[in-house]
Length: 85
Image 1 (tube, rainbow, N blue to C red):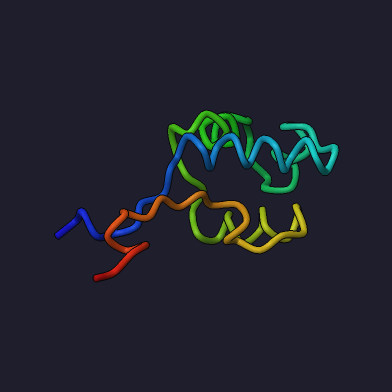
Image 2 (tube, rainbow, N blue to C red; image 1 turned 135 degrees about the horizontal axis):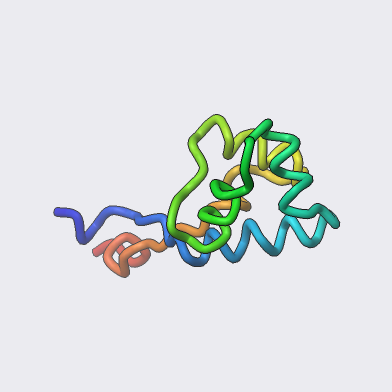
């Protein structure tokens, strides 16, 4: 059943977060300040694809980057979903 479910590509999403951050001329430290994190580790985990932002943090990222949430997440769709029989 899972073969038909879309999946978030964490590595590609991480690269996308990094790309959007750089596009807005923001440093990791800038994002750390926005989120009020004591360390930048969570942001590095997002960028390396080892973790995803929570839904709340994803909404904040979208606002900071001035994009929709769907422009941050990279979702992979199984072939069966792309071309239903």
